[in-house]
Image (cartoon, rainbow, N blue to C red; front, side, top):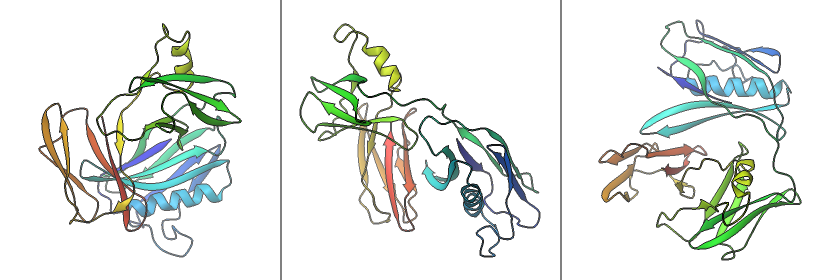
Length: 263
């Protein structure tokens, strides 16, 4: 489950309060000692950091992570809480952030339903660049066979969603699910692997945010777009990106940021 902070990011440590119930246990943030070192909670980032620390120290079988993302030039502060084990579910009660000014909220922005991972021997077929590839669970790991060796890689991300990456192409050629007429029952296999719907994404490697970076030039449906980044990692598109296309940068450290855009 992911929670997003919206509104002014300045917090009054004396008037604001925060508590949440995870796996049947109610936890209350000490706004005057958010990090265990006596530092007050005065920003949205510090609030999420304090909540993550509180949840993780409670040993409830879940892991909480505080992070931020720059989405369409706006920094969004997020808190993610997930089970430690694949397929494990946990109860999530109320998340109560009380802002004395009534201008800010911390609310659920996304969630996933716990489900079992595919079993060994189960697989799905995908088509890419005129070749058919087989992604299969073997020895509790994903293996890719068929087609051009090394062209496709597959893995489950931290939300247990299957990510399939095509190397050596920036042309926008799609990875598609092999039809049932070619491989019987493949649509059911695709659903088992969470591929009933798909998003196409281009992702960069990690780099240092800098205002001196050259612009990233994109062409979408015949229109050219220039993406620029400032020293804080904020991305700007000229002209504005079309509906259905977004570009984000994700903070991965104090000075480095990775960015990606997705369709």
